[in-house]
Image (cartoon, rainbow, N blue to C red):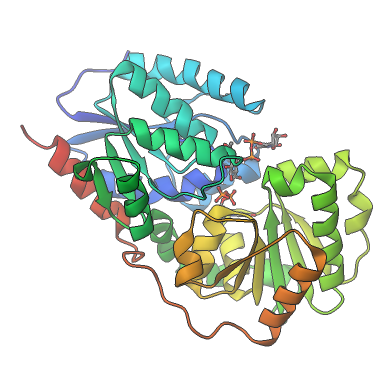
Length: 374
Ligand code: UD1
Ligand code: UDP
C-alpha cells in the first residue's frame, strides 16, 4: 500500500509509442510542484518491444514507470479489457484525484473508462482532434475519451470548435497547444550528435523518409503492395528510408512481401527507430511519406514536406497552415506528389498557434488552478 499524503495525487498514463513524447514534458512540468502534486507514471504495456517503448524512456529521459501493467497485444476488445482490469486495480490502490491520459490509443480510452466508472477526474491531452472517420479505431477512442473527460486540453482551434459542436461545456476546454512540440523543441539540439545519417550514408544526399502503420494501409494486402511498390519505384530516383513499425513488419511477412524490400538499390528498410534518431532523419528529409498522426504535426513544425497516405486527417491545421497533404493509396498519385515536392520544396508554411514548447507548462497551470489549495 502507498503512504497517504496531503498532496494531490495524479496518475499519468502511457502505453504506446506516440504517448511517450506527449507525457515527457508533462512530467517535467509536474516535477516543479512536487510539494503540491504527487505524480505516478503508469505504463500499460500496450507497446513493449525495446524500440517501441524502452528506447523512448532513454531518449526522452523519462523516469521508469511506477506501475507496469503488461497488457501486450490482442484484439481491440482483449487489449482494452485487459487494460481496464489492470488499471482499475491501480486506481483502487492509489485513489488518485486525477488521471491524465494522452492521445488516442486503446490505453487512452481504457483508462478513461475506468476513471469514469470510478468517479475519478480525467484530463485528456490532445482532446478535440477529429478525422471524422469512424472506421479508424483512434476516432472512436478520441470521441469517447472526450465525452468522459472533465478537463480537455486542445492543441488547435479546430479542436476547440469540434468539442463545442459536440456539446462539451466551454469551461472544460483549455486551448494549450501541442505538447508533442514541447518534446521536439527540447530534443532538437541533441540530434546533431546522432550518427544515423552517417550510418545510412545519407549525409548531404536527398532522401524520402517513410513510416506507415495504419491498419487501413498495412493490413490490406492490396494497399500494402501498392505502398511497397511505390517505395521501390521512388528509390529509382532518390534514397528511401523505410522505418518499419512492428504491425507493418508482421504484415509484410504474413503476405509474403519480404522480397519487395530486398536488394532494391537506394531503399533502406530499417527497424523502427528511437525518438532522437527518427527526429534526426525527419529534420533532414526532403519529403516524409507517412500515415502517422504525430509525424504530420512534427513535419509541419519542422517545415518538412509531408505526404500522408490517408483519406482524412485529425490534424487539420497541418493541411491548412502546415506542410502536409493527403494522397490516396495509389502508386501513380503517391509518386507524382512526392516527385513534385522533391523538385519544388514547399516555400510557405506557418507554425500553428501555441506550438511553442510551453504547452506542458500551460497544462500544469490549469491543473493547479483546478486542484490547488481549497
Ligand atoms: C497503436 C495505436 C495507434 C497508434 C500506434 C502507434 C490503437 C488502437 N492503435 O497501433 O493509434 O498510431 O499504436 O504506433 O491503440 N507489436 C509488436 N511489438 C510491440 C507492439 C506491437 O510486435 O511492442 C505488434 C503486435 O503484433 C501487435 C501489432 O504490432 O498485434 C499492433 O499493435 P497495437 O498496439 O495493437 O496497435 P498498433 O498498430 O501498434
Ligand atoms: N517515431 C519514432 N520512431 C519511428 C517512427 C515514429 O520515434 O520509427 C515517433 C514520431 O517522431 C512521433 C511518434 O513516434 O513522435 C508518432 O508515433 P506513431 O507514428 O507510432 O503514432 P501516431 O502518431 O500515428 O499515433
